[in-house]
Length: 73
Image (cartoon, one colour):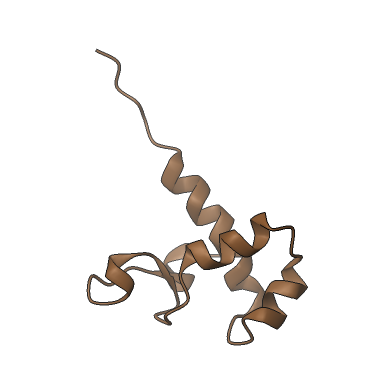
């Protein structure tokens, strides 16, 4: 799965926050639902415009965003 096919960033949309496929559903919206112990199926019920691959892409995107090198001086 190519994350950039699922996660888009547009400075003119949602304050430049990462969104799902250009919609106004932010990655953080999906992550918040997952963090509240909703299953993927429940997230899809809450946000019916999403596809299963969209929900799977959010934690992967977040993980890659957080996994960056730290330079120690």
